[in-house]
Image (cartoon, rainbow, N blue to C red):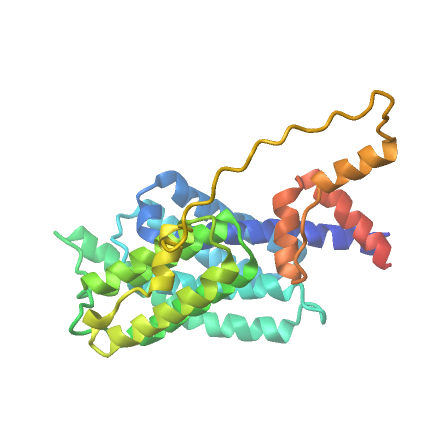
Amino acid sequence: MQATKQQQIMGFFIEEAKEHLDTIEQGLLDLQATLADAEQLNELFRAAHSIKGGAAMLGFDSIHRVAHHLEDYFKILKENSVQPDRQLEDLFLKGFDALKELVEALQSPYGFQEAQAAEIMKASQPIFSNLQSYLNRLIEAGKGAVAQKPVAPNSAKLSAEAPAFIHAVLKKMLQLFKQGDTPVTRQQLTLLCGRLEALSPAAEWRGMLQCAKEAIGNSQNSYSALAPVIIKELKQAGDLLVAGRPGEVIASTSLQKLAGGFNPLPNFPPSPPMPVLLPIQPPIQSVVRPAELSASHSRANQTTIPLEPRAAARVLLDTFNKEQLIELADFIMKAIQ
């Protein structure tokens, strides 16, 4: 009985931690907008604080310490005027990735491995040290007249980190496509396009990213249709940008169609309007049986569950409220015992 209770508590912690991780990630993907909104910045601080507290209660020291680092740095952002740039965003996202990896390790089929957690912690230490130093530099610069900003990469010359940055963003976009179609993942994909857009002021590059954002924003486009086109074209455009040939970047016809929605083919006349069909009235003696009514009702309330575990979990979280999820989790635990 005690073990079952412990499992329930662990399940609640993981569920809430994932929600907090989504909040943090969404805020970091557009850090400039987050810093301009005090309440949104407070949400990041509270999310890190909640993960820290839950990890301490359950005895996960590595998660507690990494969440504590992020909480401290969010507090610095709350108390100081900082002009964010891409380097600051990257450092925060790398620290966030360490926390996310630790939380995901809780669901490993082999259990939470302390040796693995120690390796993640060790790898994160230089990241947080660099983040602390860079924050101090930005704060000091802000106390002067104008913060010194890194030279923005342009069409002629990009920073040395640009290829790795493009690769990392495309990898993240592919992960989001695999997670399943939700308003949150579409927003995150759009924000990632914005981060790529900032790499160069070239009109062709920015036009390509704007077209990608419009395609992602069109809810009629499924992820199965979007993913191969978006990833392939941004990869090709990124290669041209790195090669110093942004003028050759152009959105394909496929991407432009996705951005503009589904329009009828010009070679075919529009379909004639469908006639309105009135339902045939059943005989008066006709009776709807309870079983038929129940079956019809159940079909109307069906939800498609993906086979991939994380995507399935996300559908359940979006479909049910907390009480229903607890009841569902309890039923599943009993079924597998």
